[in-house]
Amino acid sequence: MKEKVFIKNRDGLKIAINVITSPINKKLVILEHGLSARKEYPHMLVMEEIFAKHGFNVVNFDATNSLNESDIAPSGITFSGHYNDLVDVINWTKTQKFYVEPFALAGQSLGAASCLKYAGTYPNDVNLLVVASCPFVVGENLVKNDMMMIEVEKNGFYDKVSKSVNRTLRINKIFNDDIKTINLEPQIKNIKAKTFVIQGLLDSEYIIETSKQIYDLLNTEKQLIYLKNTPHDLANTPETKKVFVETMENILKK
Image (cartoon, rainbow, N blue to C red):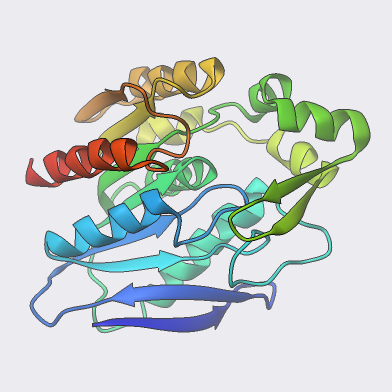
């Protein structure tokens, strides 16, 4: 059964969640998208559908301060807020009948970074981790290398346009100021979950290097999967979607 529910995060902002449950499914996965994105992005729907196919109850949510069904605060997005939304959704999930531990986490881009932080902060709670196109380990490096963040640093903001929803999201300097304080190395080293790092080879060079860095820092069962002819968004064409579907199928068969 698939339903949409709405909850409030710790700041009183609305979060929209797609929940897929089955009385016979005994496993759980929580999914988180990236900066400005939404739960209906093609790669998020691939993960949602394939996890459900492989016997997982699925929680796929819209983080706040992005271009989706959840609320936007005047101050705008930060990594800390993105991560806190993941924590708040997990805490809500703990009140549901389908909740089990340990559970799986899967995320793309900023959502992947949030999943890394959670899995390393609560290592006994997570037994499977999928991180795709993660853009940083040390936040200062993202600010130095990402063109959007360079513009934010220079001008104090950046207006990110989404053609798919015909909306614009303003990224304020609070994003840079926050992410400069983040270093995920300790959490990554602390992860116990079986971890799959997925990286498209048409992504930015610094993100490709970041995925290798994450893999090297992990002290658990792990695999680094490179996808040829695949950009940051992983499934934005029929060809890349097919490759990503096959990748997720192979991960969940192992």
